[in-house]
Image 1 (cartoon, helix red, strand yellow):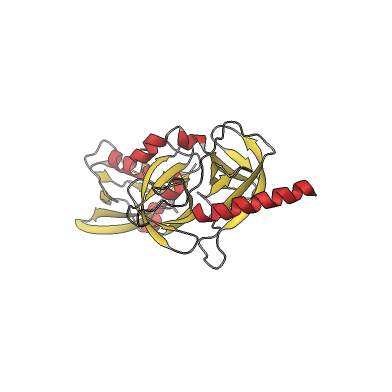
Image 2 (cartoon, helix red, strand yellow; image 1 turned 45 degrees about the vertical axis):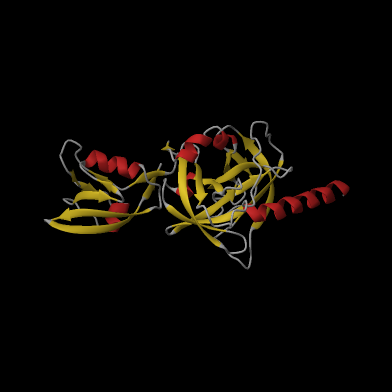
Length: 290
């Protein structure tokens, strides 16, 4: 009983500190979580939350204060992402932040504490804390039995000393089977993330538009639109010529494929095209492939 009481006290201390640096992240219509990791306002989250670099974002603190932020780099191979709270919003003071730990010596059975905003930010409820144990460890992912649900993606996982050891990644069908990105994946590619590099592809999160065309042609002519695809739902039809995809100018079908590959599933992209000589616009929610 004494040991359990000590564990309860430590969980409480970790939870109290974590609430101050665990944030809700909103980018367009999408939302997830993150954790502030330095006084200057860098925030770690999941790559599928930030989607791609240089996007405007909103970071919401526990007290409901909304801050402007900008997405930085992403390593989609492991679902690691970063963003930066825009300068000048804290009157020269440091932001409350987590202390980075190491994931190199984690083992199964270790206690851990997960925080986040399940189902999105709720000021009346606040940050939610879940306690669990690590059930599997490898270099690219941890599995825990912390009870996470949608909206928790990108939130932090702490060890019993209160250090940050991982970031929530893929939420399982069972609320007690979830994957987390080990913190060493951020430490090992820190400079690239800060610089806004964007690389890799996460299994199960491949962006899909759902069209086919001929890369040998001088224009991005849509020859096939797959049934129930993101393109079909947006109203794109066979024969349409895509000229712009988000901020990218499209010159041929290969450039369209490249532009789609730089997005993330769930991202809403404005597309400009030509149909029968007239300009048309589409709002496409990018689909997901394996």
